Every structure is written in C-alpha cells, then in structure tokens.
Image 1 (tube, rainbow, N blue to C red):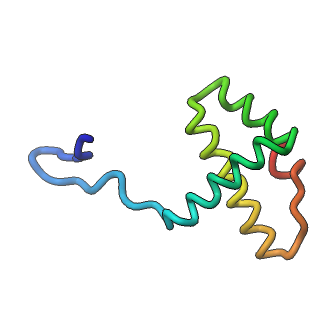
Image 2 (image 1 turned 30 degrees about the horizontal axis):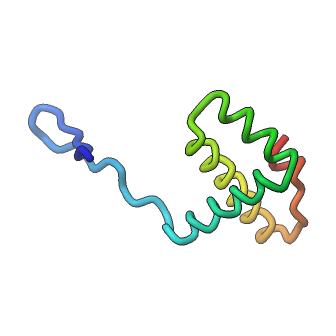
Length: 88
C-alpha cells in the first residue's frame, strides 16, 4: 500500500485515510447487509442497481451504511424499521 501524503511547498498538509469508526461495528453492519441483500427483495433490488454503477464491495458497504443510519434513527426515535423508507 502507498502512504497517503499531502504536501505543498515541502510542507505537510494533513493525514489521509484516518481511522473511521469502530471496526467491529463496521463488520457487524456489513454482515447484516449481506443478510439483508440475500433475504429482502427491496434491498436486493437497490443493491443490484448500485452494483450496476460501482464495485460490489462499495455497494455492500453502502447497504451497510444505510442500515447503520436506520439503526441510529430507530434508537433515537423508537420507531420500527421501515424498509421502504430506507431503500426507496
């Protein structure tokens, strides 16, 4: 892998590729995304549409991100999960 350096005029301008979140929680949401794509028709349709435009890894990560956002709103507002609202 290559270091991500940002330099200008010989001066360091910041760090790239910083750690982004909890790796165990990210793994759990990716696993949930795989099950959602496998067992829910609407999620599968959204996933296939996304994979036609980008890589499969990016598409599954996008599904995981949508599930994470949905979990946040479920915990914050105490509502039930609505797949139509998340994957429309």
